[in-house]
Length: 348
Image 1 (cartoon, rainbow, N blue to C red):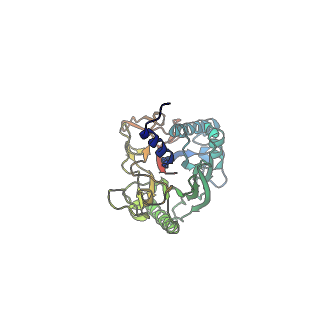
Image 2 (cartoon, one colour; image 1 turned 90 degrees about the vertical axis):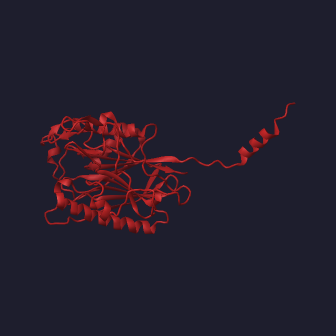
Image 3 (cartoon, rainbow, N blue to C red; image 1 turned 120 degrees about the vertical axis):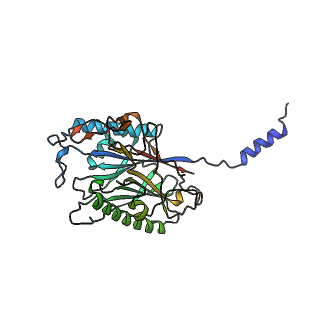
């Protein structure tokens, strides 16, 4: 009877006893301003009459259904073989449109649940977080509301905070923002900065209580680096080769580019702007921490630029996001913003 070479036997034995290091898996978060995702009904006390069948936008069930179909297609395409784990949505009206999106579109088979704010915004606009229950289990939900900074300033959207347990057992704190519009110029900028200061104080206190804080802040900030809401209110920095502080916030979405001259998520008068952003605390940028703690590295934040999200920019040249509306003129696109995608690399 033939005998196996001694070296081959030893290799087999060593393979049997050596532990196999689990490979990192991706936990993905997508942020998307979906441009006025209203239902077709007037809500008492809200300035939303334009988005009704009789309103100036002529917002019908058919148009809403088509918009939901496009949003669902975007999330499915971004996910590929597996669903996106968390989806932060900006400019959604209420539970009604989210129920239709998660239960009556092509997303229904993916089993998303959602959390939505109920803000004092005059138009009834809110932010929301869709999540995969098997991968992220909400533990606590809080909304941060900051009063207007002047008598003539309209209330803004609440900031949504969801603290959740990852499938690894770690806690992840996610914040979804939609800060005041740029149309208010200096007045709106002061309001954005006030919200940023309140948010930073809240996050800093939260990180002080966490043994290993993992914080992700995302949404439409209606601002871009290095405006004061980032550099001063949130005390954020850009990730560099220098020292990374665990409790400092770092902006990962500055300077993003995609083919075709795309240099942001929103295009205004021919110029791209990075209004949508992702920030994380320094713990998510380094290697220190316990096994199974979420990891990500700078530069992984991506623009989602599928062709069906874009159309030709006849004024500024190149391409721009495919708007649903241009003023009151219906264009039929999914949104005037592009989504952002951020993977967290998790070691199980």
